[in-house]
Length: 251
Image (cartoon, rainbow, N blue to C red; front, side, top):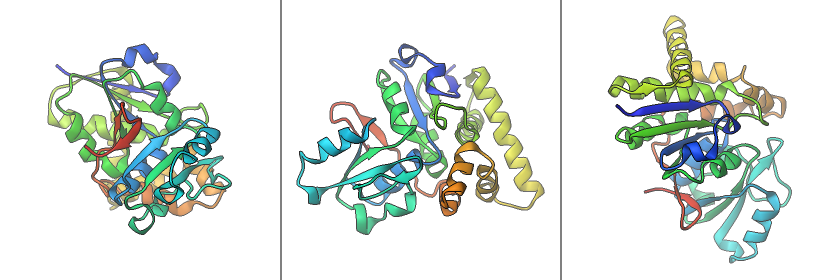
């Protein structure tokens, strides 16, 4: 049977243990969500960088009209960058046909942690079903939660649980302890949605407010990002890392 592993933080799993497998990087608030929005809006690709200076250096290698610099530090847009890390900024009139050079506090570091994997995909509520479709035939799948500033963050765990729930409904998977626990958390969210006559997306938006990542966004006035990021299957794309080109793009 195929195996599904959920890891609460990148440093909870060795890079070597992710080798030759499929890794879904989950940074729900907000890198994964933003990458989905960018590619769905027609961005050529998204190039992840760990450091701000690396983005600035790379931008100098391009015709500036062909690229956008996007990302955040402390949740806010970086000085001199074109875009921050709010998914709603990445509209077709802004990003269509452009290469996005992208760095975030947590998400792009998690991508780097998965560099030995055979496949690296970005996962979020926005592309939940599309990701499950893409990995459903793979033998070993790791859901790698990015966390918030090195700490476990429930926003990522909920999406990992949603994927574990969806995949379990499609067939028999061997789930590690993290996959079982997060699947249970997602089921509790679904039960709460029914009890309160809400859609899963509405319930998710409410629960994101109480997560570490959500609280950080509320503190800096990015309330709307929580609603946008909570929309399940709103951007049914599968951003996958092209290892040779060093970018996330659509298959």
